Image (cartoon, rainbow, N blue to C red):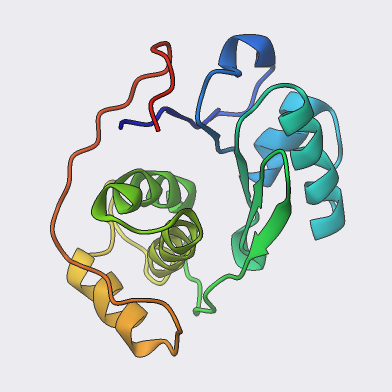
Length: 173
C-alpha cells in the first residue's frame, strides 16, 4: 500500500496529534528540537527525542543526523542507521535528498532499514559538490556506490516506482 511521510520542514511548532496518522515523521535534528523543545546534542539525545515523538503518537520517526546517520524509532525499538562517509562540500538540500529517496526505495522492495541506509547514501552523495538548486545525484551513481560497499544485504533493482502519499486514509500495510 501507499505510505504517508511527513517532513516538518522548515522546523516550527507542530500539532503532533494532527500528524499522528502519518506512517513516517522525518525531521532533521534541528527540526526535532524545535518541535519537541528537547535539545539534541548527541545521538543519545536524539534517541530520547525520537522516543518522545513515538510516545506522542507517531508510528515511525526517522531523525536525520547528518554525518552521524539517521535514527529510526518506533514502538519497540530505536536504531541508529550508519552514515556514508564522503568529502562534504555543500549540505544544501541533503534533507530533501534523504526524504525524496526514502519515499521511493520501499516501493522498490527494499526493507525499511535498507531504504534508510540507501537514503543516507543518496543524501551523502548530494553533499559532495556545490550544485545549482534542484540538481541532485544521478541514480546510477547512487546504485554504483551502493554495489561497491561491502554488504550482506540483497542487490537492489534500478526500476522506478511512483509512490502515492496519503495521510488521512486508513493505514494499509
